[in-house]
Length: 278
Image (tube, rainbow, N blue to C red; front, side, top):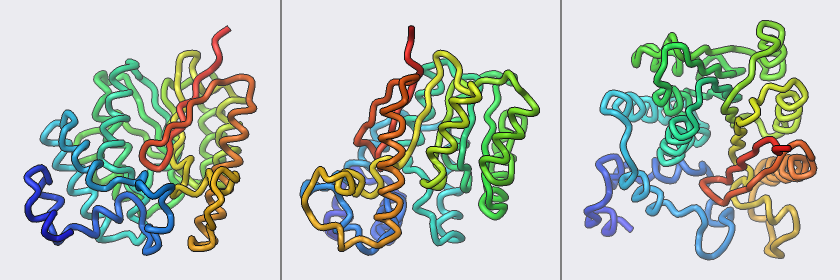
């Protein structure tokens, strides 16, 4: 593997030999990763993801530099740095914001702001807005630092507190506000309550999309659901518990007659949810 890393002409500088742990950590932080993939062909393909990121249209130089620095600082300061989305997923979010002409974004789960910067960098009007919710002040402080560095203070509104409380506050402050893109990447147990609140309070615009992350959690959700007989005893109880929450969320959305959903085996599993059109 070391020889492969040294000889590959396609690897970017961030993927040098000494940064190999970063490759693993950014996708999934676990020493049991080999037992957590979904099949023998390894759905979590580290080197393909690196190649995909390098072959995708880059962020602007200033945004790229800030996001690289943010990722590095997150890895150094947070034991759960795996909660950052990978670079390719950030580029996907960026492209979706541009593709759909999104002007109002709600993010449930800021962490240190990697996805926040990816989406905010695609907003092209000073009247556009991204509201991001985070319950932990430490990662939010880092996100705030990089939002300031890029001059996005007017675009991004960071809210601190539990997601449900923050959502309730938003509805009280702006009872008719709707969002074109809602990105859910938070505690897995909260996915159903967050989703229900969004739908019940009509926070999603008629042509808006909800993107829910980690819906195939560590390649274990389909196993929890009984789609593969392989033992899941090798993975931790915490992974199994979160995979169960993800499966319950997937079932919940599928059974909601108000929406249509596509679950994609991208990254750690991504659901794209839209309202059904009458």
